[in-house]
Amino acid sequence: MTPAALTGLDLLATAVILVDNSDVLRHMNPAAENLLEISGPHVVGQSIADVFADHELLAGALQYARKNNCSFSEHDLAIAVSGRSRMHLTCTVTPIEPGGAFDLEGCIVEFRQIEQQLRIAREERVMDQSVANRELMRNLAHEIKNPLGGIRGAAQLLDRELENPALHEYTQVIMKEADRLQALMSRLLSPHRIPRPTHLNIHEVLERVRSVLLAEFHKTISIQRDYDVSLPYVYGDNEQLIQAMLNVARNAAQALTESGATEGVITLKTRAARQVTLARKRYRHAIEVSITDNGPGIPPEISERVFYPLVSGRDTGSGLGLTIAQNFVSQHNGTLTFESAPGKTCFTVLLPVAESPEHAGQGQVS
Ligand SMILES: Nc1ncnc2c1ncn2[C@@H]1O[C@H](COP(=O)(O)OP(=O)(O)OP(=O)(O)O)[C@@H](O)[C@H]1O
Ligand SMILES: [Mg+2]
Image (tube, rainbow, N blue to C red):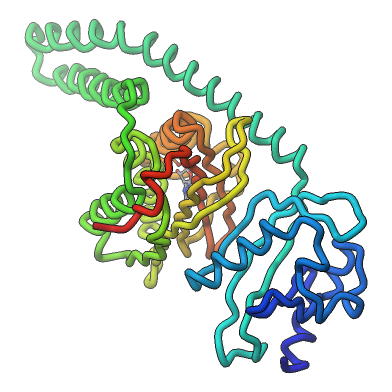
């Protein structure tokens, strides 16, 4: 391993270890020494089985990343350094490129501390907010829809009776605005269709989203795919999942187009995730879908409220896309979260995978 590459690792604030293909620990940076409370020189050269008491999940993550030659995240890795109490960490394992700066055949493992309580509290808040959103939408739509038909009908009658042609302009405005509101109400009510779940391939969902977006935005954006085709099926409602992903991806395409980006790229990525807690329930397996764009980012003044109904940063937006997407994802017991900064916005959907072995490993794009 080259000293320059290792010095780079040692300067990182993230806890990182290097493990070779025989599961031997080859390097530990100071951030990892701090987090794990061990001295690197004492453990380097030892097998991970000797260093960590519960090493099975870590070994499984290493094996998965190596076998599939892709990065793999373990969302709740319970691990204990021999003789100490267990810690809950998130770990991401990435295979090292052969011939790269590390000159090592193995993997780089990053550890992050999960502030478990904080995360659960945040998820509960999002869930409660999403229930409140749904309730608000239902009430609002109900209150507006009924009188709206009457208003439109009366304007139409008035329009026919008017003798002064100049006045038609006013009745036309009433009718047009009533129609616009009607369309908005129909969108508000659409999430209440009863879901029809089936075992489905998440990549087929994403391919639909991709073709719809390309038809609409092929002049301004390109779409990259980074799929883990070994993913299992998801049990869900095809139309709802397409709509949820499309709402998120369309926002990205609109942000890129409206900002005039010349090299707008949207990346659709899928990965396996394990040991996740979603909607207060623990799942051994989940699917992580991320939709990333290199656009201007979510305007900071609305970023805390983007999932609320009618919050929009666009002149022509109705502010319902993300509310509907979040409702659909939470109806699948999943979560929809995002991180955004100028140049990179990433929405992540985590969907649980039902335990049914006969549907495992069938996520290939057909
Ligand atoms: N990828 C993104 N990049 C930049 N801004 C975004 C992105 N995704 C969402 N936003 C911001 O979040 C706002 C809310 O999005 P949402 O989809 O809920 O509503 P909308 O797009 O304005 O309207 P609608 O989807 O109902 O037509 C958007 O108006 C936009 O300002
Ligand atoms: Mg939208």
